[in-house]
Length: 171
Image 1 (cartoon, one colour):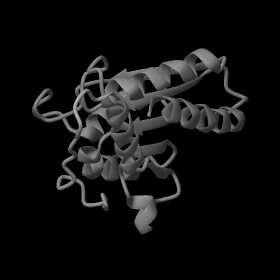
Image 2 (spheres, rainbow, N blue to C red):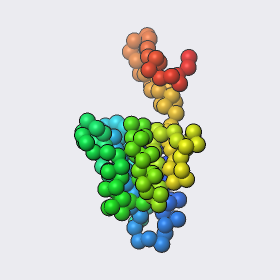
Image 3 (cartoon, one colour):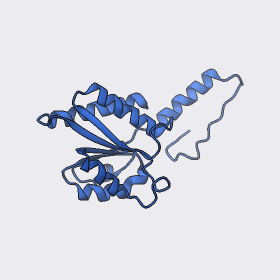
Image 4 (cartoon, rainbow, N blue to C red):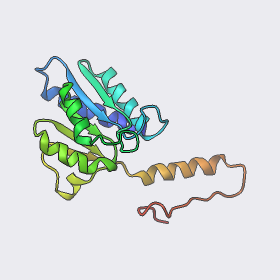
């Protein structure tokens, strides 16, 4: 997942940076649903963004982690987006489906800012304006690879996998 995110972000930022090459620096903002160091979903996005910052000269990442109601009661996604835009972000990446309504609102408030909503589906359904894109990998492939690893490394003669939590998992 991390390599996929790194490759995606490098391609994405190469495009945006080429378009805005007249600017001295290109600042992008990342809204992370969890802590930047959660050893999971948010950290993978954070590290991919840091890699982009390292690889592309003149690109700077700013971020807000714990962008969720439990960690930030009373704060909305549009308010967090406003903060990132006020700090110079020309691209906002939001990494949770839980941010869908807030991102939809922020997109309408900032028609000159590009948005990428990870795990959103507005582009797929045709609801997205031109400056909103979505990205979501097929999680089933990661689960399949984890199953292969489990099979190859188990010390017992069987393994199990619960597929009921995922509607896109077929036997």
